[in-house]
Length: 304
Image 1 (cartoon, one colour):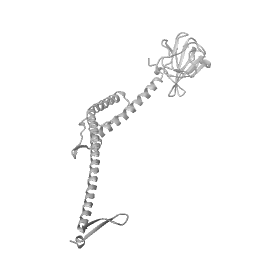
Image 2 (cartoon, helix red, strand yellow):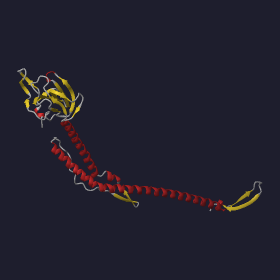
Image 3 (cartoon, helix red, strand yellow):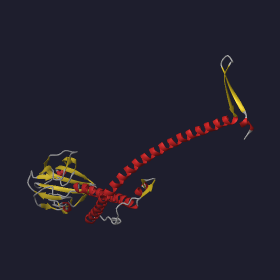
Image 4 (tube, one colour):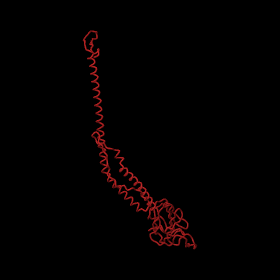
């Protein structure tokens, strides 16, 4: 034992006047024991406080992870229940698209892989600290889900192209002359070179002549916009419709009309009455179809 530990020490307590009040005697080893004990007690207290705080944090973290795990479990169950329905829908979309393309005669070549043998979604779980942890990366990187998403995007893109084609085709059809502008009446003169009925020499007849009676209804053969109404030399009272795509229709020798320049007209809408104005030998409709200003034979456009 160290000599200082065997020495006896005295602690004298004095009042404010310097008078001795109390005398405490102790050996060195007593003081050393008190210091060591106090240090150990303080260290133990600090250790207990730190461990308690650490345990509280771990408990809170575990509670948060448990709740997140429960939420993910619910989402996984929902995905498992929904996936077969999505797969069935994808198969139906595949079939519908192929039928649509095959019947449309569009010349499209579908390039869809047949991935119909898809197993239900598999989820990987692992145990750690008595908690079921979800392997989220396995869920979202699952090749089956990625394959399904890829097929869906490809199919939607292809269907979008097809729908756009049909929309454009429908628009073209609506604006392409396809009806007789007069319900009844014979075709009295066709398209091409002929002897002029008044002057008697060969000329190019740029349309069809349809016979009838003054006042017979003249109808629009397609949707369009009125770009001309008025008297036009030998054509007499005339109406011109613009149908877009470079197509126009001309109606001559009219008795009158019910439309004005700028009006939007629809297929089968009444636009005028047959007459015999201009250079005409009798009531009839002179009907022309022009594309980019060039006269076309109207007969192929009379689909009804």
